[in-house]
Image (cartoon, rainbow, N blue to C red; front, side, top):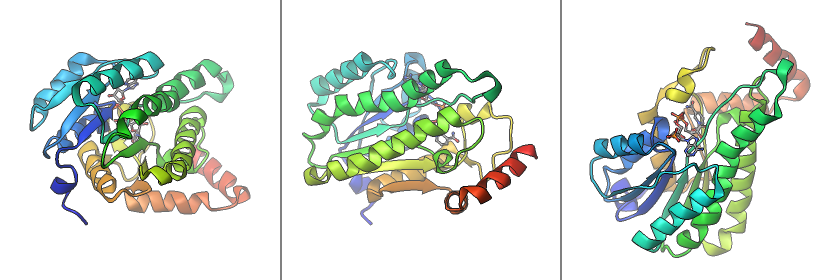
Length: 257
Ligand SMILES: NC(=O)c1ccc[n+]([C@@H]2O[C@H](COP(=O)([O-])OP(=O)(O)OC[C@H]3O[C@@H](n4cnc5c(N)ncnc54)[C@H](OP(=O)(O)O)[C@@H]3O)[C@@H](O)[C@H]2O)c1
């Protein structure tokens, strides 16, 4: 495989959700290379703090609520004005809220889909014209191993990640004639502010820095699916391949525990 420093050399990369967790680790790790980074999230002060931790200062802060279409358009305009193009659009921003089936609440689904799915759809819409101007264009988007299996309480989060995976897998084929590779990222548990709120065991949990390493390597390989940690993701894939009449009692048992 090509050296990572060669792959990322001189690349203009938009990272969404760069103020914390995996996005922050990605920004810091990608600043080790000769990159130009655009960092987005709602919290400008936190983005500035991430910038101060980066290895170089070729970093543009472009804050905004990405679940809002106009924010994505404004950021794309900023990238257009500054660089005229975009090499890698790395859509990582997202949130997680758990469903209480006893109090099924469509507003929760709307919030999660807006932050996870529609933020990416708006981002792709805004970024595509810029990505099309690159000699080495690429789209990378964050899903989750959570979508492999219908996990209780993840009805909204898992469904948003399933929608993302489907959309990116389909878009990969649509963009083949234009030679724009599309990767979908499926991490297992990663230690971040998002998972710090979880009240259940998280087998195989890895650090955000390790997650960023996997994502950077998978991006450079232009892997269709970047899934990790491998033992966890392969167990999840195997479980998902079981018929539902076997999955249902096994999951019910796990949840009881
Ligand atoms: N951690 C895990 O175990 C895990 C596993 C699989 C997949 N993932 C996915 O990986 C991604 C990053 O997760 P994380 O664990 O690093 O979470 P995190 O630490 O909570 O970070 C989430 C990032 O997304 C940004 N964000 C959220 N809503 C936004 C919005 N409406 N507009 C703009 N930015 C927004 C946040 O920034 P602001 O608050 O500053 O806006 C923050 O930078 C998410 O898509 C998550 O679903 C995580």
